[in-house]
Amino acid sequence: MQNDILLRAALNKPTSRTPVWLMRQAGRILPEYRKVREAAGDFKTLVTTPELAAEVTIQPVDILGVDAAIIFSDILVIPEAMGLPYEMEERKGPVFPKVVSSQTDINSLRISQAEDLQYVLEAIKLTKQQLNGHVPLIGFAGAPWTIFSYMIEGGGSKTFSKAKKMLYTNPELAHQLLDKITQSTINYLKGQIAAGADLIQLFDSWAGILSPEQYQEFSLRYIQQICEAINEVPKTVFAKGAFFARAEMNALPCQVIGLDWNMDIEESKRMLPNKVLQGNLDPCALYGSLDDVRRETKKMIDAFGSHPHIANLGHGLYPDTEVDKVKCFIDTVKEYSALRSKN
Ligand code: CP3
Image (tube, rainbow, N blue to C red; front, side, top):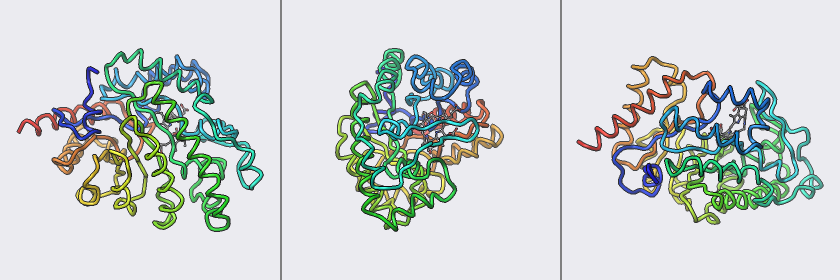
C-alpha cells in the first residue's frame, strides 16, 4: 500500500505524522457528491449501485487528501437485510415503514448473511480496485444498540424513548433482537473484510442516551461479541456520548477508540491507556475562520501529544461545512503533526 499510515497508526506502529480522515467524509459536503447524488435520483440508488458508491467513496480521497476511504453506504442496510426495509426521506432522514414491537415481529426477522448485502460487497471490491493500493478502505456497521433503536423507533428521535422503554419493560425481548442484530453484523463485517475492507469501524451513535449500567448490558456486551468475532483487521469502536464507559472500553478487544468532543483528551488518555485514540475536534469548530480552524486543530494535536492518535472530528461532518475549512483541518493535521514528530 502506498499510504498505509492509518493502518500503521491503528496497530500502534510508528508513523511520520498523524493520519487523518473524517467521519461522513463521503457525501454531505462535496459538490462533486451532490452531482452524482442528483443524477442517481435518490440516496438508496446510490447505495445499491456499486459503481456509484465506489465513485463517491473515492471522491474525498482525491479532493480532500484524507489518509483513508470509507465505503459509501449506511448503517441501516442491516435492518433491511434482516427484513425491515428503510426509506431515506429528503431533508428528514431515515424512516422505517414497519417497526419492531413484539415477539412475533422479532421472530419474523432473519439473521442476515453477508450475501444479503452483495451490493455493498461489490462496491467494496470495485473501490479497492480503483484505489489501487493508494490508501486503505474502511468498512463499517452500526453497533447493535444504535441499529436496535432505529428498528424500534422507525426513524430518528430526540429521546429514543420507545427503544429505551423496551429495555425497562421487556429486557428479554430486547436481548433477542440485539442478539439477531449482532449475528447479522458479524456476518456482514466478515463479508466486508473478505471483499477487501482493511479496517472496520462500529458506530454507536446513540450510546449517550443509556445509563452506564444499561450501556454495559444492552450495548457493550454486543460490541464485545463483535470485536471477539472479528480478528482479521484492526477495529475501531466509536460510541458517541459514552464518556461514562471509557474505562470499560479500554478492555474491549479492539485497537482504536473514537472520542467525541465532549470527552476530555487528557482524561481519555489516562482512561484508555491501551488504545489508539481517534478524534475528536468538534465538527462546529470548522465553522470558524481558517485561522480558528488552524488554531483548534493544533490544540487538538498538542493535547494528544505522544499518545497514539488518528485525527478525526468528534462526530460526522455537518452538511453545511465549507470545503476549504475541511481541507484546512486536514492540511493542518498533516503539516503540524509532521513538524512535531521531527522535533
Ligand atoms: O462516512 C461516510 O461518509 C460513509 C458513509 C456513511 C453514511 N452514513 C452516508 C449517508 C456513514 C458511515 C453513515 C453512518 C450513519 N448513518 C450513522 C452513524 C454515524 C453518525 O452520524 O452518527 C447513522 C446514525 C446513520 C443514519 C442516517 N443516514 C441518518 C440519520 C441520515 C440522515 C441525515 C444525514 O444526512 O446524515 C442518513 C442519510 C445519509 N447517510 C446520507 C449520507 C451521505 C445523506 C443522504 C443524502 O445524500 O441525502
